[in-house]
Length: 324
Ligand code: NAX
Image (cartoon, rainbow, N blue to C red; front, side):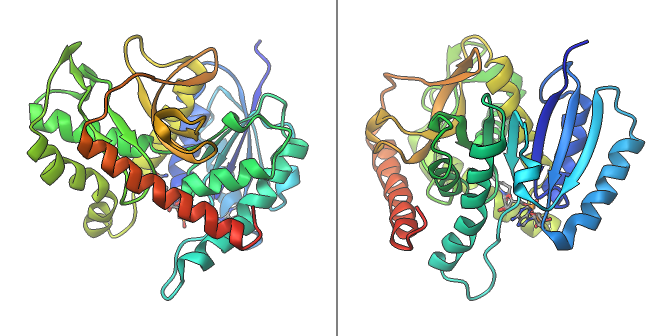
């Protein structure tokens, strides 16, 4: 029998947590290996997280060995191999950007420290809670003993949304498409770039006017469209993207394909070193590798520079507050 893998999920009582936990427990994320779940919540939401834990037990997943609920990060990250940081402080009416960054630094700094001190040496981290890229940067900065590249942020939902739009445009299932890229920040400045997309392994080529005028704005504003339609923000699709991200990190990306992942830059594509930016990446042996040598159109280059400027401004704001 394979030893159980410990997975910690923060924000476990939230709506993404509710969609995510059942899929982790079913084996969709890590394949056929037993899992121990550790759920982290703020004290006011521990009761709700306990309710979710009861439902997880009632689902009788053969791979689910245990579920424990915590309100203390040190305990929640003890021995964890996979940390999914979903809980974050949302922006509320009248909140300035600096306040939002500071509130989240107050969450992701201590969680990074707890991961540093208590998690498994093999820990891998996915930040979902917004502002995800900068929250990942903050967590990594507080975990000096953990290699920075183990801290990633989620742009896979944007990637999947882009594939859905392309599939609809071409009238094909997304499984026939590969090599989509989303560059930059997980924000309205993100850069969905279908220039290298293949259909059944063959180049497609999309009209640049359609990409700029319709496709990219639709992908970048999809979250708002979901809120308008559903009356609540994306939850099951966000959870599904988190599953995809970790699944591919652990089990590898498809041959000949790549996916979008926000990773600490090593200077690739002139993104300043250290910023957590979305890149096209493949995974093998549990390591992400940025796809190199892609040609960027002038429009993509300009848009990526703007998104990277936003990331740098977020980093500088957190630094100015003394939180980095
Ligand atoms: P919810 O408000 O439903 O749930 C968030 C949960 O986090 C709450 O239960 C809250 O008690 C908990 N929480 C807050 N602070 C915490 C802390 N310090 N430790 C542990 N738990 C804490 O939000 P939900 O819809 O689940 O979204 C969660 C986060 O994902 C938000 O920040 C949201 O903006 C972000 N998203 C990121 C996406 C991405 O693509 N990167 C897409 C979906 C989503 O919008």
